Length: 216
Length: 244
Image (tube, rainbow over all chains, first blue to last red):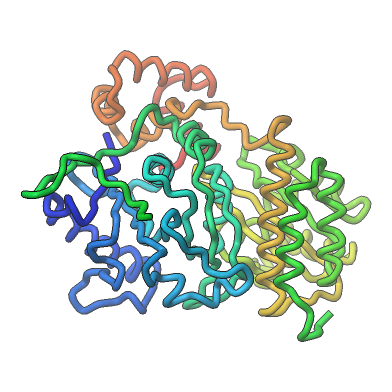
């Protein structure tokens, strides 16, 4: 069964190969399939300025194989919306705070695009955010995502008018984190129980607790 | 309205915020009417796209169409040949009706629907495809004779229309909808079976017992009036109740 694994700066040494696979898959999907040329790299890996210690990956693994993934990044640091796409938030401004995270690089491999893996990933982002005290997510998405958010019960509000980014109509949104949304998407996907898997790793000197990401 | 100082952003954002306060589909029609008139639109429709087993009439969520056109469009089953609907299914990007391709010589009924529409003052149109997570397909289509459709206005219209669609779906949901007769579990076992997995393989994948898999397949088979598991898969695929 597919579980969504939480991979952070603290436990990513347990997921080295898998993370590498995710960079490769991201390149295949975002550069080759979707045509996002600006992400293209000679080494065939999609890695950007936000793939660092601060990044949190929620990777969908089925039998050890990646079937999908997504990434979270704190808005208290320079992030994609603030650095690359600030003009997409010209109407409402760029939300930022310790309880607001940016949600990026969402993908599902071609063979799993029936909806079920999507529901798991969407449930995962809500479940994780709820647990961590994250109250809002921001995202830069192509317009066709809006009906998907709506179907999944995600309350997304635009931060500015849509604009053409690399020939695709794109909009910046702010999304509520809520139990209602989690329940809605679990029901949509026919999912029972938690979708998350979090292997807490301790290195010498660390405590055995699940880190919370809210600072101050 | 082509004033460069016209604040399309404010228009769109006010519209979206006001939507939440509307409690009936009539109120949404009125709201959409006043917003879309600014861009020259006289007519619009918000509708799901029917699969072969569904009728167009049961998929319509909201419409403001010229008198008489609905009866013709439904009666002639134009939805099955409409080039706009066809392109809508194939793309995620909004498009003008004139961009929907068809062969004028061979596809006479397609040409017919496009020509008859112009007789009802639906000369120029704009269509916004909607593709859901679980195979749901719908569109918002609007038209008029003199439209203000530019790179400045299209984003605002797109945004407003999508949010209006969502509000309408919330209001209409209890009474009708993209009613898939199959439950999530039934859909899932059929999807795996459709790609050749045996009951025991499906059981392993879904982490349920083989007996439960068979149970779901049986229920699905009954609901679809299918003679066999294979027949159930075929019927489900044909009616777009499942995808591969």
